[in-house]
Length: 83
Image (tube, rainbow, N blue to C red; front, side, top):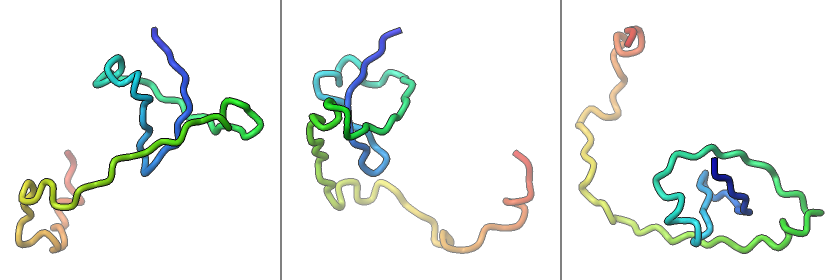
């Protein structure tokens, strides 16, 4: 089993991998353990700033279509039926 350790700062539920690890770990299932970095730890204070690309509004315009009754309440049998 391969294991790595790096410092990161979650942003909107996402953790960014250091770029040198992207090709090695891309699309692989992984186990994630989060531990808060304690300020007394010298490595934690040396944590590099993480930048995230800005989102582009309208990039996938028209990719999703909702029905006209999207905001209507769901019928009772939807909530009461078993899968």
